[in-house]
Length: 264
Image (cartoon, rainbow, N blue to C red; front, side):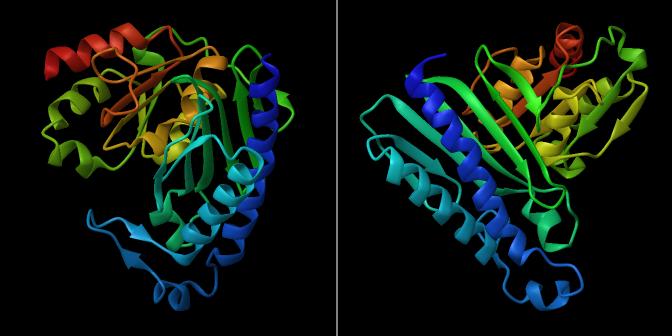
């Protein structure tokens, strides 16, 4: 493991946990109605809260305080160009819509690139008390337990996770989603980061998403791949810039891609 990468990986875990702890302070339960007054909506109609901003501020200050020459991309405060060859891509709260409704399925995501290659990812679930982490060549872990994707090799036996149904409809991709959904055993709406972690730990077999940004997937790509799975867009390429994403246990990837391509 590269020493510079390893040092940053260790900071990624620490920083994500601390940022998640800060966000957790704002997480509504019995005070959800009061918290709702503090929600704002961005140009794309997605919500943002003081918790998002506080958590990203923590990530920026912690990471760039240690590695000031690194690049940094955050959902809330934009991009800083770096000169070291390393770049951080973070989402302080992935699943803000769940967060503001008091649903515990939200996470703090930190992805790390080295010379354009994603080398590490950390997903912290503050409300559930879990940390998912992976670095190239070191495997994928949930807390201290190594995780692997499932061995299911027939679509008819699979669980497919998806994000918001309307995202497929608005993008004119509904027929593709339905074509795949008809081939699986069960479909579950475990969206955002959560569906990807379920694939990584073998609890689900496919995660199909549309409308993602780099900060939504940078942390989960190393996690999926180090767990033995495959992550691409709907054409089979890996890119942080495409809105469509497919994660599988690897055994099912080509079959799912074929269905998506033929239905498009």
